[in-house]
Length: 517
Image 1 (cartoon, rainbow, N blue to C red):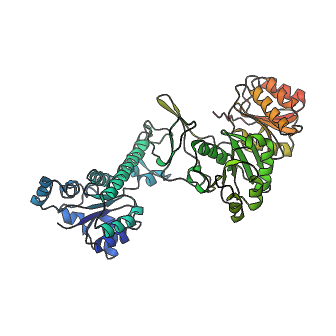
Image 2: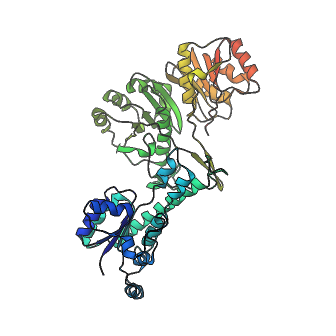
Image 3: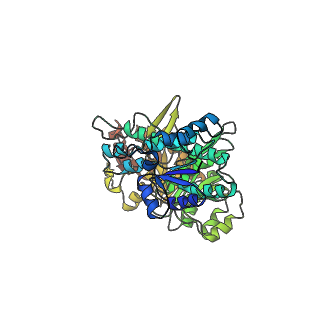
C-alpha cells in the first residue's frame, strides 16, 4: 500500500514546502480546492479528493471529504487485521498524514461587517471531522493543524522513517484542543445572538481556552497548588506576553502583582514608575525620565517597597538601574532594558527582569470565581477626561491642581477599595488601601505620608467612590489637602459640597466610580 497524505488548509503558510518534502519522501498527496490549485501551480504533484473518491464536490463545497474512502483510510487501525482486510476488499489505501486547518471562523466574526450568513458559512464541517478522526486513530495516523509543526514532522520522518508514536500522540492532543477552541468560539458566537441575530456582549454559554505556560511551586500560599495559563494569542500590551531576561522562576504572587503593576504603569502617557506590594500601589510617579519617576515613586513608601514589583513604561536605562539596584525587589518590568541596565542587574541573579511590549490591548472580560459560578465583567478601562470634570465648589482648581487630580484619580482606580490617594507634583504622597471605612483609608494614607517625611500641605486627594459623609473630607483637608476628586453621587453630596466650601477647598466630580475588589 502506498503512503498517503491528505492536505487541505485555509492557512497556507509553509504548505507548499511541506507538501514538496512529503512527495520527496514518497508520499502520494491528496488535496482539495484552493490547496490543490496552489500545489499544482507550484509544481507539487497531487490528486484532487474528488478524483480519488470518484464522488464530485457538491453543495457549494459543503461536501468534499465526507466520504468512506477518506474516513476509512484515516480510521483503519493498522495493527487490526480485520480493518486492513476491509480496506483491501474495498480498494482503499490508508491515509498516513492528515494536514488540515479549519475555515477562519474567528477571523470572520471579528470583522465589523460580518453577517450571520457569513459566520454560518465559515463553520467548518469536513475539516473537524477529518482531524478528529485522525487524532482518534493517532496510533496509526499523524495529524497536523499547526504550520509550525511542519518542519519537525518532516525532520522526524527523515530521521526515523516515519512520525513516531510519541509525536503522533502530541499532535493528537493539539487537535482536540484546537477543535474544542473552535467549537467554543462557535458556541460563544451563536449563544450571544439576540432574536434579530445581533450580537450581545455576554453569551448564554461562555467557553474560553487558555494554554498552560508552567506549573508553579505553589499558589498564594505554600499549601495551594497553582499553574499559569495564557491565551493562545496574546495581544501587544498584555502581561502574559512577557519575556523573562533573568532571575528565578516567577511565582503565583509575582505574576499577579506584576499584572497590577504593568496595568497601572502603562495607563500613563508620561514616563512613569509604579511600585506594587500585595496587589496595591505603594508608590507611583511620573517624571521626565524613568530614573526621576522611580526616585519619586520610591519616596512614597520606601518601607513597603522592599520586596515589591517595579514597573516602568519606558526603557530602563543604566542611570535608572543604578538607583533601583539599591533596593530589594522581586521583579522589574519594562518595555526594554538598556545594555548597561542589564549588566547592572546581572549582579542580582535572582532578580526577575521582564520585558512586555507596549500596546493598547486590554482583556475583553475580567473573571472572578464564586462558589459554583463565575462573575464576568468588562475591565475598568474608563477614565474621566479632564474636560468632563465638574467643579462643584465655589473655589476652582488651578491648572497644576487639575494635573495632580487627574494623576491621583488614575492611580486610585488601581488601588483596592476603599481608596484614598494623596498626590502632588506628579507623585503619590500617601496611599490608603483596602479599608472598610473610607475615613480609615484617609487616615492611613496620611500616616504613610508622615512616616515617609512627606508633607501633605497643598496636596490633592482622590477617593475611588463618593464620600458618604463629610467626615472623610474633613480628614483629608485637616491633612493639608486643597483639592479633591471623587465620583459624586451620594444622597449627601450637598452636605459634602458645603463642607468643601466651608473649608475653602476645590472639589471636582467625575461621575464615575472605581471600586476594586
